Structures are given as structure tokens and as C-alpha cells.
Length: 232
Image 1 (cartoon, rainbow, N blue to C red):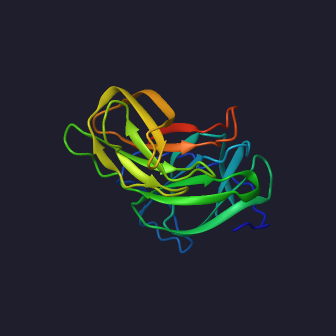
Image 2 (image 1 turned 180 degrees about the horizontal axis):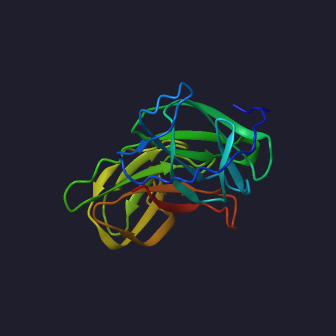
Image 3 (image 1 turned 135 degrees about the horizontal axis):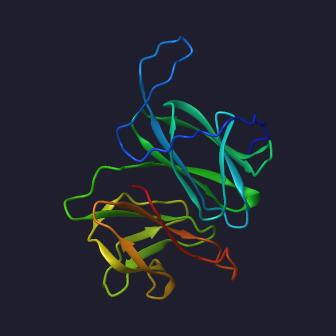
């Protein structure tokens, strides 16, 4: 839902977090200095053609980022929070979402769709350690206007994930580590490869998100393809 609310510029949060158990010691308004278990929140720019964006939490500008980039996790207070994005150095939200953030949990916020219909997709991230000698991956379809998509590994018969429509995502699933994965995305029910992501290193013990991006009608930097990010 679009909003015309305005926000204040504030100091960037300097603490990035990369572990599941993290506490943020801060004095609350009642001056109780009991440590608070933080929420981890990260932003990913998946809105083709939108340009550089500021991400904003409860009216405070946190950082800025460009298309296909992610900013890692930041520490945030748990509870119901107002999340938003704006064009870089603007004071007007492009879009906002209110989300209930749980203490100790991690979330990825994807900025999705095109400029005229920008939205936020808030996804809780399961960062439990993979099985012994395994990694974990998930797949998200973030290509505006794309049909349902399958994700496969080149040289295998069956896809890893199937039939994910725009803004739909899978849970994390185990995968064997390798230095040379080539991932392929296809329309569900088709054998035609629409895009590939080659020579992807998947490391033991790590967790990744692979996402379909861009627009089928474009041949520039916003064209349809695949991206990968490391959650942990």
C-alpha cells in the first residue's frame, strides 16, 4: 500500500549482526537497563529500474543501496515496527509495511516490483545451522510479471524448487556444497532455460537465497536473470 508519510533523517545504525543469538543492550524509555534480545533485519533491493533507495525503520534512515544489492543484517528492537523505503536522500516514502518482529528472529525485507507499484516483501529467515556437511538454499521469484518458475541445477533431472509465482518463496532446503554449481531457472512446465547463474560457490555450513530478478522485456541491467545472496 502506497503512503505519502514523511520521515526524519537520523543516524545510521552501525551494528550488523551475523549470528542467531544476539543481545542489544540499550536503555529503554523507562531506564530499565535489562539487555534486550534483538531482531535481525536486512534489506534487499529487487525493484528493477527504481534507482538507489534509502531504507527506513520507524522513521529513521538506516542506509542506502542499489538494485540487486543487500545490506546484511542490522540489529533492531523487536515488536511492531514501521518499515519503509524512499528514493535516496528523499523525505517521502515510496512504500511502507508494518511488521511484527520477534526477538531473536531474522528477517529479509525485499523491495519488489517496479517504481510505480513498489512493495515490500517481509520474509522470516530460518538460520538454523544446516545438516552436517551440508549447506541450505531457498528460492524466491522476484521478477515482476514472470509466470511461475522452477529452479534447477544444470545436469540434474528434477528441479530443486517448482511453481513459485511472483513474490512466492520456498523454505530453506539442504544441498551438498560445491564450487561449481550452475543454477537454471525455467517457466514451470517448460524445459527451456530462461536464465543461468554459473560457477556459484556453495560452502558447507552456509545459508543462501537465490532469487529471480528483472524484467523479461528488458535487455539492459534490469533484464531477467538470477541473483544469489548469503544469509549466513
